[in-house]
Image (cartoon, rainbow, N blue to C red; front, side, top):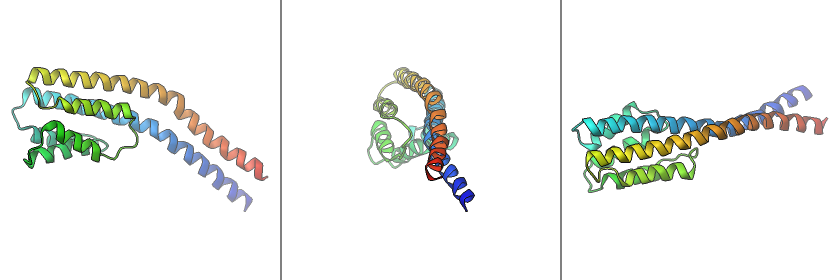
Length: 170
């Protein structure tokens, strides 16, 4: 019975450590996916003559599931012709996107990107995309540094906390 308790304590605390570490991994993944999708979005805006709503829906189909909602929701809002601008639709989608992995700064970059969405000619749109992508790449670099530091730390703390609890009860 004691052995079963020991295994459960170690498993539980280790799992908690891995869950905390997952937050860093997911942030990196979402930032990489968003950069990739924004690059695709930039290409579509530059070379396609399709309406913005259709472009966004096409990008959502090829995007990772972690960021798909933002593009599909924005595309749906624009396709419904309710009078929203692209920036307003993007803002609504960001507010409804339930994402606990990104930092406030990451979301602010995406929000500021939305302000310039669809408000100017193709050349200025490209500049808006380039700025957002560059800022997200910096955030990705920061996320990778944080991840190197903290992922291993949380995993080890989980295991060590389990061992400490077991020692206390023995």
